Image: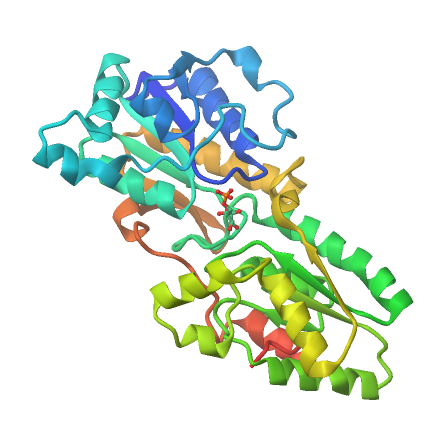
Length: 362
Ligand code: F6P
């Protein structure tokens, strides 16, 4: 066995599930057990399992045949342990953060590997400040985590969304219709942009580029004049109109809460009104998060998981593993916390989309 500063390592998955989580769990656990002889303790349902000490010592047999399994064998949640910290301190109450530290020490943990997205990594950064030895892995289908070129889960969701767009071409062309497909991505439009380019979307709407329905209408009508009998419109769930982008957050949220149906239905309705074209909607939703990971995500999750465990063994804590260029590096968690990677307006993929004639709503 190789030397390791850590003897007992905890692991949890937090936030939205994503394809590749089980591949990452397998990589962390096998490296910890087989290379370093560590004991690995799994926590159920994200940070909630740490707060409530819902844990179990993981057995080597648990990692056979999970490389290709979607979801997470540990379960997950969107628990935010620091949400009541101030109240607890003011009221001298045992808060979630104290419970986490109690669990950590009671189980004799000397390291914790956390798999999650932006919210999870922000919490992980705060737990580092509370003295816990943490390494995190960047997981999300949104690919919206800073300091890493790519997150595991994104390529599988991209593949699912692209296949759906491919399928919509045949029905759209059969009925001479506009097909609107809504994909995930609340604050960042990476999934919509990449699946739109991969699937040949004629219009791609992302949160970063507020849309003008008149611009969309002109583009779709011009396609008709050019003899194109159908169009595909790819919309990120967080896409906004120019008017909405100018609103304060509260007013925007209120307006959206009053809307019947998600943004895809709103766009279809506006297209029917402005362009007088027949439009139908597909909301891809959680299909993008389910199922077996594509090969790329299995490889990325395995690389991240083994690298994370090697960093644990070396005591290189307080970091998120990241892909930068073609290299896996460790990035200080304080550089990741409270940040989100949105699509830069001058990103090469934005330019490529425009160069092939895609309308981005502006
Ligand atoms: O963060 C990943 C994600 O799938 C987003 O794309 C989506 O907006 C959100 O999670 C949905 O959250 P929940 O799974 O809590 O409904």
